[in-house]
Image (tube, rainbow, N blue to C red; front, side, top):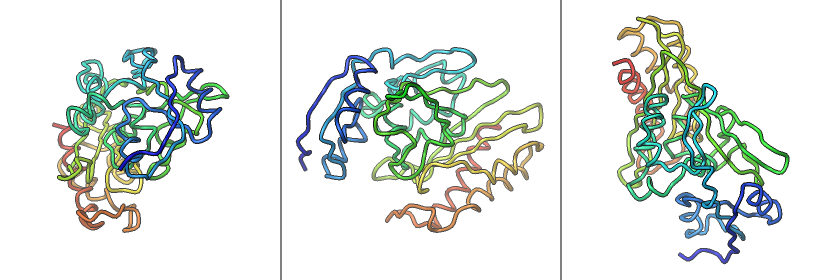
Length: 285
């Protein structure tokens, strides 16, 4: 299908982008556009105005600052996957970026757009939740930080308002930690049927702190608190890992899983436990 008719603007600064969003009801930002344009072609979204922010080069930086990784909203999935800095400090995010779509999507799609779009089927949200990340967003009232735990509210629903623009993703850098992201790929779309990110802080043979998050089949990306509770302040052994993974789906019922003709809620629940265990073993190995 063809998209609806729309006006097009190319912003030359963050302030100009915010002004354009504020002055045009229903306006949407575009950068990589791998989330928005397909939905425009199917008629699921019909924004009257598109605001292009690709000219904002300052939003493409990846750097360490004040004990955090700062990743600009326009950093592409390919750049995140290839970054040695991210691989060292936040491997789960690098893993997730390498799993996104195909080569064309990874080279065009951006981290800010991916998170702001709120698609519950994508890879990055689980990694950002597990890593304890936050988004810096700018709007008419200035800057604010949105913790990843408060970001995802539903399928294509986030805490970012219509007139705000994501400028960077912040990931805290912690000592004695490691992380990973694994997924079961939908053979048709490439989206995760289930994706699980694990972040662990360890001390010798014990787990001091754990953050586990899932994406794909659930109604929105979410932390697996029951698994975390089982892991925190425990000794690392086979029984601990197996018991924790078995609890992955205990907080969800059938209605918490999105409808998918290729995967029933029961199957997705099973996959959630399987991939939680696999991700835990990958990190601990």
